[in-house]
Length: 106
Figure 1 (cartoon, helix red, strand yellow):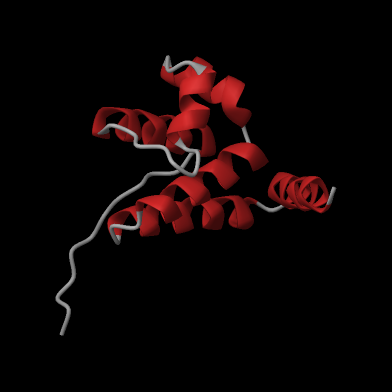
Figure 2 (cartoon, rainbow, N blue to C red; figure 1 turned 120 degrees about the vertical axis):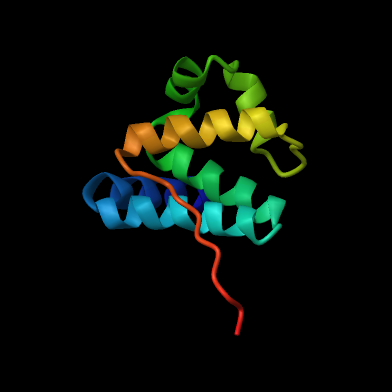
């Protein structure tokens, strides 16, 4: 019950707050770039649940809904081609451009 209420609260905020939606997406992508695949899956799954949902993501990617759910689940192991497809579909849905930048660690 608490989890469902939390999920509804996150979805309600995502509907009304575009910056919150982008921060959900950004946290997942930051985790991916840091090599934290579980953090990526969790962040992107939260974004998908709060925004377009798995059925619409499946329509946009051509990847079956159940496969997306497994891929972004706690023990998922997505292939790079699927990661790129999902990230591309999400960025198009959100209307954002995703870029990576290399910086000097000094």
